[in-house]
Length: 361
Image 1 (cartoon, one colour):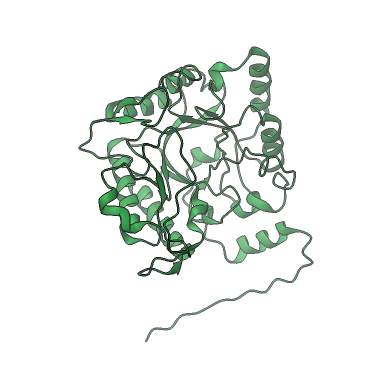
Image 2: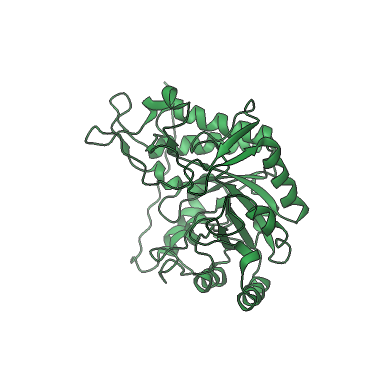
């Protein structure tokens, strides 16, 4: 039998400074923060588009294109495209040249294509921003034709029931269920989806939403396990897949301080613009919390309430060197293009003072 060496460290402290614990962890035990693209460290502003309409309540589409003209003014370094898929969890297929997206939207669905997504990538690049595509770690719309093959990958609760995923937005046609990262079939599905995104669209980054869904327990009788170990293994495979497609490509998590899986990614891009997170002074503190966990990894948040919590965003950015985000198409609409002149001037001035987002252990 083989032998393994196990190294154990003991840190004694009074509990008053969580930053001390994280610095100790990054020095001795954390996964190395190597291979992070230089461009990611320089991102000041993250634009996050949920297939936004040109006007709130109108048909979806056109908002990304309208806002791309503002990317250079607002120092947008990364633009993430979300909501452009046929069904949640079923993001792309190379033989599916066209499809309907936003099938649950009250204003009607939107016809999209692979060519259209490639045009958004090119538009981002032409306006000085890198381009990212969105996937979700655990959500799946049962209306997808893939449901029949993947239904045994649903995460099972202690009660024996399959929990509904608590999201029923405009991108959901039927009902969303909670898939298990402990399921081999689900893992292979997600990796294949990302491989096709890289092949067909060639984005600069993949943003995995709600990676904290990797924490928990799957009571499926054939799996029956804690899921976090499976999640770490998945993250390692996913990052290798992305890096094999290009060393300059990036993997971003969405832990929002609820999980440590960003340690196996290039950075963090979760939506923290809520009262329970960004609204709390402790969340924005220099020591402890997400900033110390990330170490050298960049923090470039998404923010669906980016305008409403702009002051809190800037407080976080000034304290820990994070970037700022502005979402469009969910909660807030209009993006940069829809800002009133006074607010536009203030945001431009604030962004101008930001140093490129960097983390220091």
